[in-house]
Image 1 (tube, protein in one colour):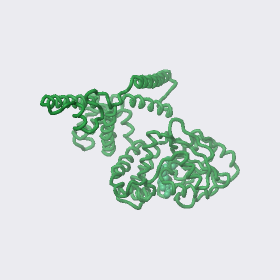
Image 2: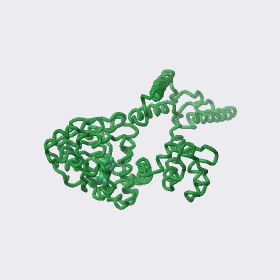
Image 3: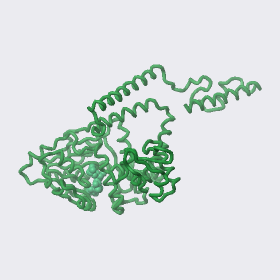
Image 4: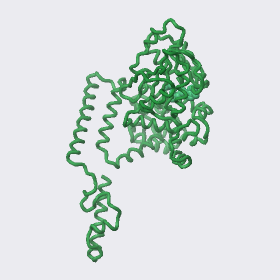
Length: 462
Ligand SMILES: C[S@@+](CC[C@H](N)C(=O)[O-])C[C@H]1O[C@@H](n2cnc3c(N)ncnc32)[C@H](O)[C@@H]1O
């Protein structure tokens, strides 16, 4: 719309110029005016048609057809929800499918100029949410269906200017993230309530604002200094550059900041639904095969607080907790041990470094989730080689990561750019074949997770 208005205004201006000049015999013909006074036009202001790709009738029909099929998908969803056969809250793959369909519909309708109109408010919303979490604004808002608070009372509770609170609340009200039930009052929505506690989603948002955003902003200066080359190492990363810590890995840097490290570990739990610990993979073979041996049955390498092992224990009846191991950096393991849940009480927690020798040998299965994408290929080959060296001939390695499709999804590409900041990357299946093969492993099967790019890759010694 805006482009059209500009075009029309420019056209009138050119016509007026032409009329003025031609009446004074300065210009012989409009085409020479265009040819000599402006660069080749994006489109012809006189005909409004020559060089612009306006949708043909066929294309318009195509858009209409696609919109109609997306609309029927949304309408079928509504029918299933009404009939009680679909719950978007509990059915993550279906919810992600519907979100993607709704986004596809919006993309079909969008003009090129609409993108920027989406991006700019998003930045304001992101900043407002981060500040409200930091200032405990969400926590100080009453919850419940009818609950509301005046901006004045809310500002008083958190010790801020009323105007400041109202200005940062405004983008969130505009985005329907908060409600404004009456002028001067604000209320929670289910979306904002997630940020009232130290939830994994809140931790993820803080991690992106505090860790990722500064690194994204440092990228132009980083590439000016280091040249336009793909960063691969784990020491001189864009993230380290952004925090003035070149030569140190992201985990070294975080170990100086226990709060940031704790937040990062908590944030990992936010993506649990996108990264199911096993998905369709059935680990019950381990329980029957190794019942009588004393071997470890499951070793989660870089397992954080043991979130994947906890889920695997739930999904695999008969798997004894005392034969499962969670490995991570010593400081992470110490923190995890201090808050262990009852069902994890018998699990062994082992401090280690996955770039060094694997301390548990000959386990039935080694498991590594969301760690390899933190590193470039050479480091991954080293990490996999350590595991491969510890594996017995019948051991399996289970890798859970995103496996990029071609072209990749928006979420996977965003994850890839976040990984680039710390010298890592998301990989295609041939990328995984390459790094596992170089570490003396072969891929047996890939179990894809419905509705996301995550997959479990089962490997054995080559
Ligand atoms: C992205 S998190 C993944 C956590 C967990 N696997 C999950 O999927 O929820 C990466 C994990 O690797 C651990 N880590 C980082 N460097 C490590 C190292 N050198 N040795 C062992 N663990 C490490 C981190 O502490 C963190 O728990």
